[in-house]
Length: 137
Ligand code: FES
Image (cartoon, rainbow, N blue to C red):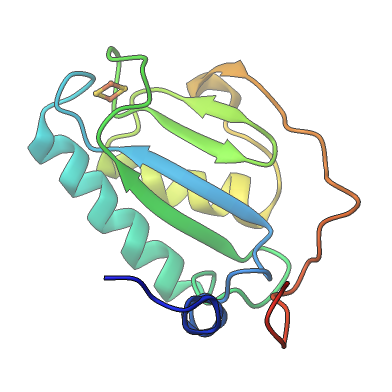
């Protein structure tokens, strides 16, 4: 099924895309962690973002979340990466998620003891921070 670009832009606006400060990708396994462990971490991440008002694209700490089934590390999971900083976390079990949300997403200070590498992405100055109101050619 093919959706029009206008329809997709409307969906993106509804999801708050274009207003987020960060994007978190959390691996739910199965190779870096048991799928049950990844699922539990995901459920807590969803709840924490919602409870702290970070999940709808509003505010300076707004964060989009995506669950994935492999970030190609495949050990020491659940593996998680946060963009645009490109901060890679290991061992992100459910019990670690609340501290991560508070310290990294709200206070802007990564939890260094759980970070195992970094790959920051350059900020694209040409990018429109908000979704277009009209269709893009
Ligand atoms: S299965 Fe999680 S990084 Fe590959």
